[in-house]
Image (tube, rainbow, N blue to C red; front, side):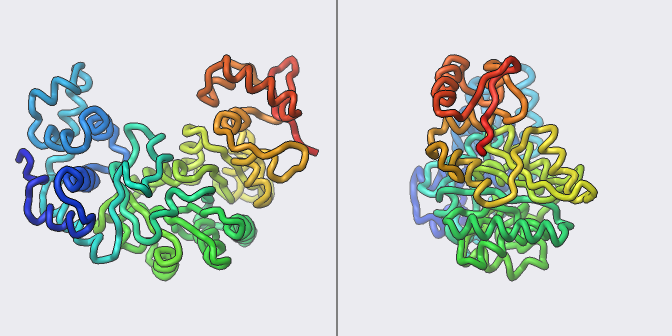
Length: 396
């Protein structure tokens, strides 16, 4: 089995037709396309192996379990067991024909295969670490994956008229201002956000839980076709892959990673949108939620985010812009794009004080650097210090 997937003539011809590369470059593309066929999204064992050995050598090791490669990555019994279980998952899919079909399927629908190092590869997904995608399959304008700013808008599939209206207002306004609207192509809030962006000739990305050659839900066939023409449809799964419940959940981490901020507009108490919100919070991305009627079950998840997860209350596009550019809606302080300041401001609450140690845990910044930034922000009037700790100043 060793090197069979890398040396198969049909695989190499299909990869060359899709990427226009030869030699080591096409080896990397083939290896990553193969990993997208072998694994389910977010496979941490495969991700760790690729990080340790590189995609090509990791694939060779996965196919033959060579002792030399194994010594480099399997220093503990737990690691060796994880790799052994991983190979059991991957081997049943190790068929060169499946890789060839994925590559040819992408060519047939005009999709691109993006791998790390490509100009259009979105570095934000690398923040997912060993759970980052091995490759991305893209129909449409791949350059949107690295365009700024990008805002993820998600919410209930069974949305209300109120939710659809707010989603359209916020997404349309943001898209008019040049923001790329990122969502999941589903019914409800996702669809309203995509349509609003398209309606103002804006830019939008749809992240799918299946191959980019399969319109799902089928009722959004025309919408997804428009997005592929005016924006981009993206998936980490190869062409031909069917959406499953697990893949929808895994897809949510990409929506959160691609957005420079995430906004939840209507979500039930156990909504899948809360899963996306959780990924955004774990990645340190600004998180906002739109409040709804207290009697509406469709907004219970948003209220939960506001109450339990310190999400920012947003009611307009201007307030969403402030999530990644503090002060954008106010003349009291200049906007900043410094990533450390943004991370610190995002970690601060306007209602509850937090000590430096807690802010360090939330932001991932060093306590000494946080102290220095807090001093500057206090001089600007952006933060205040009380007995309970530091908190963000609420603009009048």
